[in-house]
Image (cartoon, rainbow, N blue to C red; front, side):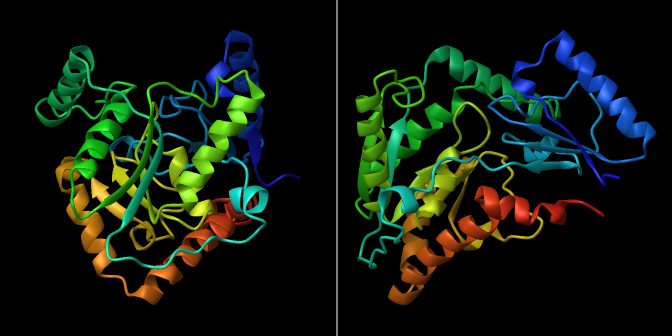
Length: 295
């Protein structure tokens, strides 16, 4: 009696037994003539699944490799406004210069990473290979490169707390973990714009956290795909920076900021929070889930 079937599998941890059961389910669903939906999370979720699915929702997607049945799954964490801000958005007033925030991990480029990246670009631009995926840590290198450019820009006020290692997800000390979390939240609310760039996967967790707090993301487009891109013009809600225009990031932010009136700047913060609640929070995403499906 179901309209659709969902594969309840964490594909990042798949093994032969899991794959066998998933294949069995996929075959039964096909025999029943129903569409099959798979959810694939994590940094490697751009990879091909071992079963045929009618629709796949992934954390990490490459626009150039995307199929028509691939969609982006948002990252979800706690609601910062609800848990830390007494359920009230901390609205900032427009200043002459934009304040750009970032709290997180960024690393210097090493020769091995640079060579891998160059080879991925040769395959894409010279050999016309679509399967040209940058090294897994290329996003962390891009972060540091962009932050360095912004730090030298006289038209930008920076609010950076750069970590030399990942301090939150693998932190066993609860008190230290909570300290780092609060530092992250305060960095968000004490900034006008939040720098968002891919990490190991081709997606930005921070993008969704910025929207959650009513902050304007500065998104580096690394051939990425955002949720509901067929229905939402995301460039209305963020400063959009193409990867090959990273050297212009300061100018792009300043131009975006200058083009907003004081009231538009305030309104955009409310809009960022609204679009998070209505479309990319867990409740918002799944209440609109049917929009992806031709049923």
